[in-house]
Amino acid sequence: MARKGFRHTEETKRKMSEGKKGTKNPNYGKHPSEETRKKLSNALRGKPSRNKGKKHSEEAKRKMSLSLKKLKGENLGRFPKGNVPWNLGISFNRGNKNFRFGKPSSYYEGHGRVRRKDLNNQYFRSRWEANFARILNYWKVPWEYEKTRFDLGDCTYCPDFKVFDPEAGNYFVEIMGFFDETHKRKFKLFTEKYPQERLQIIHKEEYNDLKKEFSNKIENWEEWSKNANATI
Figure 1 (spheres, rainbow, N blue to C red):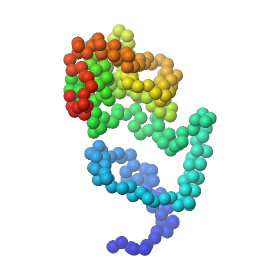
Figure 2 (tube, helix red, strand yellow):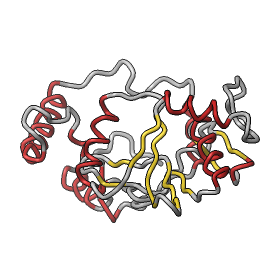
Figure 3 (cartoon, rainbow, N blue to C red):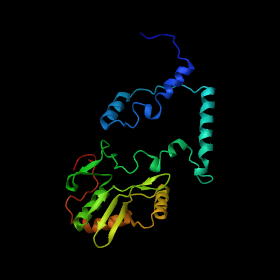
Figure 4 (cartoon, rainbow, N blue to C red):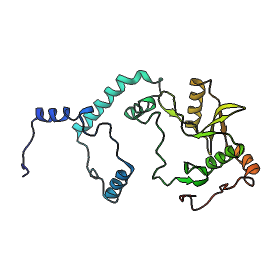
């Protein structure tokens, strides 16, 4: 029976909180499976947020402000002047501090990405990448897709392909459909931190040149299709 009107003392609340922090939490180190995520998503779909219409009290706002100021003050020295991220909490989960650092990406599972049966049932982010993999197979050059991740400090970078060319040696390839400031920054950090690694960037112009040469030679070459989420 619920004890209506009962309130825990501040000391009891503190002990309860301490007993479930960090490694003491029963869910510490656990991550929901894709199936669990789907169930949670379906269960919450269409329901309004529990905080909808609610406003933080002035006391809550003051505490949040003090907490962020403390966080910013303790870690301000990590960043160049004038370039402090607005959300420092998120920035600390980047790079080698991220629990996914160095692990193969499971992003494709359940996100409508397409498997290519002719490429060992491999997921790819785009048909451009799948077609480039077919070109490498046509050349009989071994390759890996998104297997190597580099620590850039406040972020990581995972090139699309690592190519094991017996004549040219090993190098990385990035297939770029578009190129923005984030990409420029990552590539600059990558070349500065890993000058010994070779990276080839294939932009739209280079891809179109490859397309002209190989699209009629390679079986299963992909063109744009409305049915983009099917297994092919």
